[in-house]
Length: 321
Image (cartoon, rainbow, N blue to C red):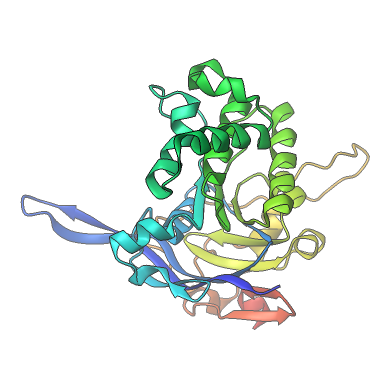
């Protein structure tokens, strides 16, 4: 495999302003120095607690949110240096599937109109070709082409998410950010959508960034997993290695909460004390040290180095310095 996307020191900080003249009094570090590489054809999952910066990272990569700092290199192109017009054309290569299938579709448009919009915006196609492509997209995601004239409220949640996937596929992208695409669906529907995404990945040679907090879903669909805490990456590893032997104390705590299907098997639960620190004023040193059960003295003052501890596996923790 070769690198499709390289992210270097990505940051997204939101200024906090107060007073009559909107003076900046602080900053919320939603994403604070994320670096990673995504290979062609793989699924890289990003996991972590709510508010850790997963979705902000994905949207910053697509420039749906403008990053504060960092490099985003997609097939050798620096995405952050593209002008608005260049970025508009470049979006055909990178798409997103949103979390909420009820809010991500315009209720006033039929599915036909929703799927036609990207084709009309980016490709100058004859009318009959647009209709053919829409019908083809509907069939690809497991819906009948005659459903295209219905409105979103006439579909179930799983069907709406299939429409969202069809919209993302309309321009034949190479990279798709999947922002918790099954978290709003019933458990019985999740497997269908996940299987569909895997089939489409193989059929169209897609590369996914799969954002989720569901560790069972991540284990099923991903090739590698990155773990985020308070805007920073704390561990990155191949999926099976991470689940077999998590290294970072935070990853270990997440894995201990994963349900075990065998009632006879007992797993020691790691209960974290305290609350997630305020991203406006994160702790010095390792951001996790205030809740870490094995914190060392230097954890409170020295930021841990992002270090490769084995081929393809990296962690930011003083335990492995």
